[in-house]
Structures are given as structure tokens and as C-alpha cells.
Length: 116
Image 1 (cartoon, rainbow, N blue to C red):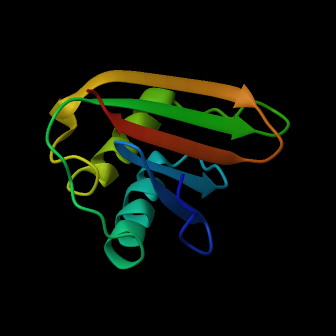
Image 2 (image 1 turned 90 degrees about the horizontal axis):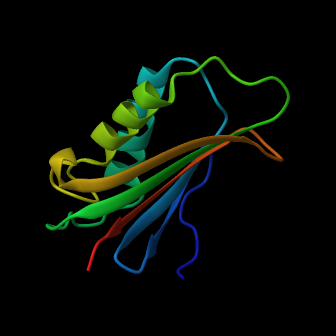
């Protein structure tokens, strides 16, 4: 695997068949993530989108109380942000797994991998 790129709230790396990125912090405003991720991909992590079907895993880790954040809204905002960077359109998503779990820090991790 490649090393992580990015300083600040968003980091990413290329992995076999796609990309993985992590966002530190959680907010109930899912629309906050789209411009944050979009700017990161535009300025710091320029990769070319790919055709084909993708599998996407989204994990939201939290510390303390469970955040009152709808995972479906979070997934939509993040998939929209990945559009044009990892894949051309979110209609290429053939499998989507969203999970919320207790963790060591507030963080969202997204892994998008092209199916063979």
C-alpha cells in the first residue's frame, strides 16, 4: 500500500484498484464533508477516475455517545465528493457497506475499490 497523502483533516492513499481516505472528526452536518473532500482531491490528491463497478466501504468511528448522524446522508455526501475523482458516477457503485462503530477517535474512513 502507498503512504498517506495529506495534512489536516483529510488524508488519502491509492490502494489496489482504488483509493482509501480518512476524515478526522464527525459532524451531524453531512453536507460539510462534500466540499471538504472535493477540495482535498482537487488540490492534494489528484487521481484519475476509473470506469467499471466499485465496492465502497464507509466506516464512521466515534468516541463516547453515538452521534445522531444518518449514515445514508453521510454516504450520499461522500459518494458525491468522490464522483469525478475515484469513479465517474456513483451509479458505478455495485456494493455499498456503511458501518458505525465505537473507536479510538472520531473519524470516517472510506475505501472505494474497483471490482474485477
